[in-house]
Length: 132
Image (cartoon, rainbow, N blue to C red):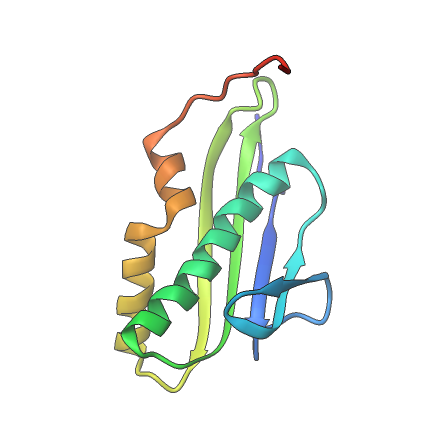
């Protein structure tokens, strides 16, 4: 049985949420707002959302695209028996004067290069180390 209730959101600029935890952000003068409970499941999805939001800003700057706001929602579930992820999905909303085609191309580039989604797609090992 899978549980799909682990949704998080990060937002900045004109799409910045009034609810959540404000945090400083390199590319936005007012920072970002994080909407996520503090559970391991939510934090995994927050890593995806935060990485995508950062990369949207970084790549937009690189391409000369002016952004007014960005909001990324990530969600997914876990098998209730093993706690293995059933997958993560995310949605990106962008406020900009750029054309829909330009924004779509930006989001496509981000989907290809975003580090956290790329690492999760490739798979990874997690090893506990002893102190010292």
